[in-house]
Image 1 (cartoon, one colour):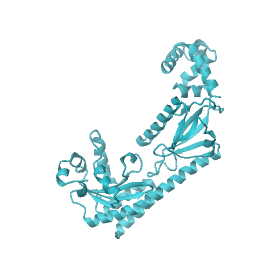
Image 2: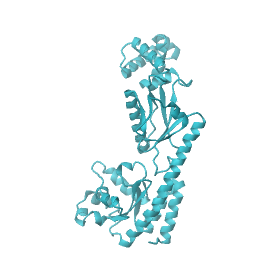
Image 3: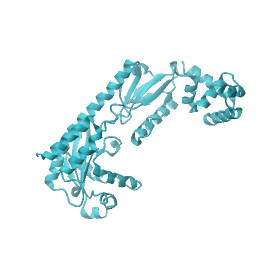
Image 4: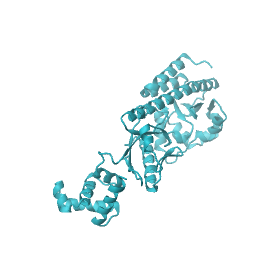
Length: 369
């Protein structure tokens, strides 16, 4: 079905947004208005994928605000009933195919969220791109969408499938270029996707893989159970930081019995992080702790969760310095170093300075095997 010149121009704006993501909202405003809609979205059909890959027009902001305000009781409304239509290959679906008028009148979502947002009526294009199902829902007030308009939505969905596919390919290639660039500086780097899987690893990273650290079932793995738990927690924190816009997590230490311990840091995917559809989580930079820039203080802080001052004190005490000597060397009062020592014991579970000395010595020897 032929699109109007207005809709064709709006699709062109979506192509521009591939490389200029700040233009997505204006482009989708134009698409929505060209079809007589108040608002529209592009989003993965699977709810679990929606921490990435969601863009919307200006008109969707009020709906998002009301959904966030009522998230304590809100559950997916369209997805459970729409799923059979998606799986059967329908190019579009309307609200009347999913709900009766009576159900809509008695639906808290429709009456308390959709209606106040001027999104009473709903219809969606459906398409597949890069192995995933996607939806492009359109919203407007009280007037249902005409059948011919729904056909146009299906055609827009087919066009947008191409845009999403191009976007994912550009993003993926850009991210992989970054880890290849890091390899040229001797930096071991691993690209992690939105599911926590290893998308690719450069040669220096592959050189660090061994029978105690590597990739298993598509994800990073380590033989030591405590390190594996830290690694799993680290990956969860990366996903949380990406979904909330918060800071990336602190580095994590991976212990190995027969080889130097590893430090894993995370950095944003600078070229792909602005691309909404692919959802690359991060680049992991891996280093072994025998490298010169890893001081005892830095290592102790990372392993035991100590502050810089506490790690400095632990290192000094392990080398034979007493509390008064440490206080004088650091330019602080004896009371301050005693307080720091109590904090070290509280964080580590140690009870005596002799245990501290023994544990730090063990770290120094085992981390440099």
